[in-house]
Image 1 (cartoon, rainbow, N blue to C red):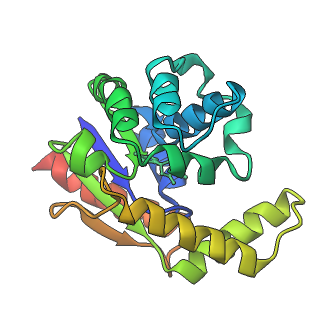
Image 2 (image 1 turned 180 degrees about the vertical axis):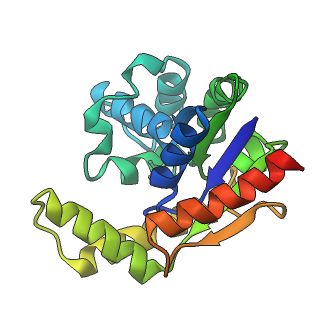
Length: 208
Ligand code: DC
């Protein structure tokens, strides 16, 4: 069984996807980590993030063992990831890994931007998780402040807005809701309520 969870930055999709995987005993893949790792490796090779050949090379040589690297969660890496993610050759190089991961038994949950549309268009369950821009910025701001980062709300809002623009506006696999994806707007939902609503939907699909 494949559960695809897509949505914009700071929508809560990662937390939700992780909880769903643990609830159903499925494997979990944060596909954003793949793009983050490509950005990390391009920089480590002292090459430019906007150099498509360098990004493709990093994607083809990506070591999946390094996906848990805590550096990938650092500020600025998400932004860098969205730059290399625009290149079609990078996306293609990462596709097979994601598709073979999705076939894991008894099931897999993958979260990202194009799982339900491009990577696993035949997923059994597709969720499109979103929340208003202000609310996503508010969550990210509190998350960063809790880690003692000196940030302002306005700065975070602008970063997320720019990332939305880049992820939705690119030509290669832009972020968009698959027509058959269930829309989960978490603007007014806490993680518990979002999780409950997703489980109800998935259980219905499993039972049908
Ligand atoms: O989900 P995240 O914030 O870790 O993702 C970082 C960037 O990677 C995101 O801004 C765009 C890119 N990405 C993508 O293009 N496709 C995916 N399936 C996952 C992430």
